[in-house]
Length: 136
Image (tube, helix red, strand yellow):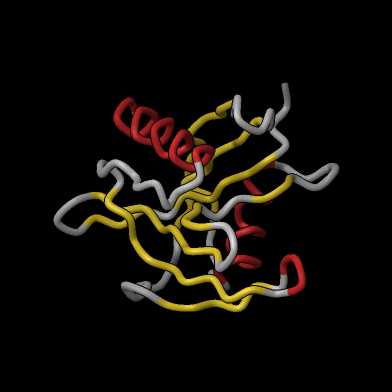
């Protein structure tokens, strides 16, 4: 089944490997992800979603695989994205999705178990990514 969602994965190495995440004001802690437009490749969708949701320019660097969410029925494509600038530890970006929201970005230690503040679909996605990156 072709992926209908794309998730840009931005990583940084500090004391541990961290992944970019954000707090949605209505829906808890999440990873950036969004729908793949008709005729759009999943890597270009990942780059577009990162611009729309985080205001970050990037390039898709590496395909990290696809995962099917039993929770939502969607198939996600994951792409590691390279960002050409250093990103701060936290920041707020106003995204125009769904009438506009302020998303609060932060870095989540990839190997840490996500709390209950993460929706189950994102906890499952993080589990997939931990495995995919360990095998890469």
